[in-house]
Length: 108
Image 1 (cartoon, rainbow, N blue to C red):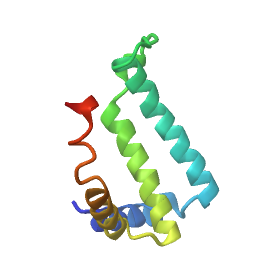
Image 2 (tube, rainbow, N blue to C red):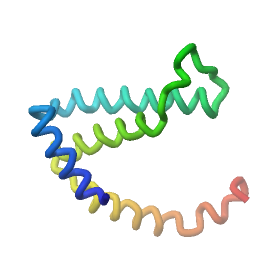
Image 3 (cartoon, one colour):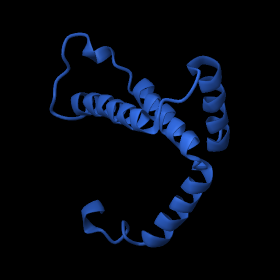
Image 4 (cartoon, one colour):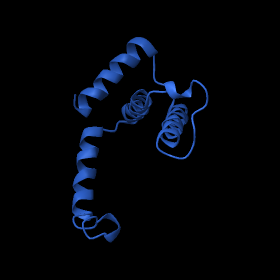
């Protein structure tokens, strides 16, 4: 599914199940909360933190999907076409970083 379709799917879901979008500030807070949940899993699974009891049941894919969902909500309610914006950003990064990473001795 492409980003355009994801934006449509989320919009339809919100209108059917969520009644309306939360305001932008609430969604920004929700996005921050969801990113924090991803960070918690990453720090425990791949970092030096340890899981608390029952915390290992956390699903990284589910939490990343929560981040994507809220991000799409914010894009929808602010009129951002994520597919177009992402394509432009990737082109910009490709041009800017053409040799940057290849020439970085830390990565070789």
